[in-house]
Length: 149
Image (tube, rainbow, N blue to C red; front, side, top):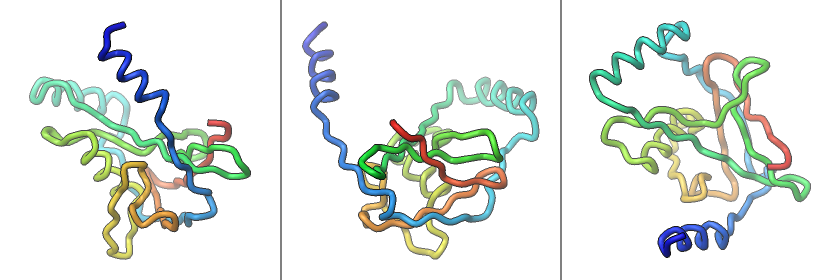
């Protein structure tokens, strides 16, 4: 391994992530966000057309970590009764990953009361430790915990 690889590895191994308790946050619902395409074939066709026009597209997903009862939890969006996903989506053409993730997190989980949320580097609003999240995506949705992350 070169020195650059070992620097990245060293940074990764020595990084500390502060987790806030799940009880510090409230959760609600907001208006549904719907998929642009009404079927999987329609989505693939749109993706082919966009690739021809714009080239490769990029996407980002956010991992929301909290703790409860001394265990880390990952919060996932629940779509319907059987599908879970991380919040995120496609980046705009010239958008960088951090700004794009902040935009997508605000669209999916942001407040509806007009208060602008500023996302911190750890993914929670800078106003943490108390926060409010709302989410609705493709109809019925809730944030669920994935235990033992």
